[in-house]
Length: 212
Image 1 (cartoon, rainbow, N blue to C red):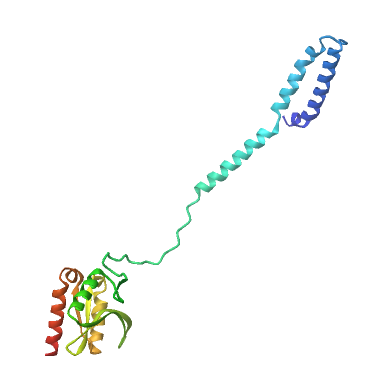
Image 2 (spheres, helix red, strand yellow):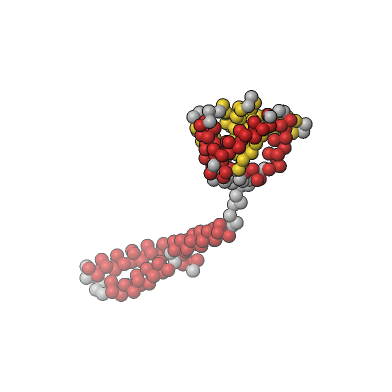
């Protein structure tokens, strides 16, 4: 087969020349019937030309190479996803930013407490950042509400689901605030949402009781 591939072009040229010459002589009636006699030879040469055409083999070789590349890519393990810093999901009533008359509140429970404090005509603020530095405890934290009543400021905390995950930290913070002269009273978020007026009433009573 390699030998045929090398001689295919000269053989085709020779066959074309012979075919043209035979057809010309046949048309001129110089050698009648020569075209019919040469036709089988031309067909055989054409068959050799087609069978020895390297183009289909190159095409098949290209397809095989491409198939092997695709198969190799499919066998590769998918790239590992980059590690992401763990961020715990927050509950629906947890850390958000809700604007209320210029204050930034963190939940609908806090909004209801703010409305109840406002209805009582109390002086208060919300989302206050405090810096605690007591012994080995140094941290900046946010207090839900600071309420002025009975001649002093008292922190009112609305404990959502996150309080259960950070109860020990909150307890340490409350001790540090108390040591600095600031008392902290905590109330569950669900209760603040259901009965905010009752929570505020209890808070004011507790503050007044501590000062008596």
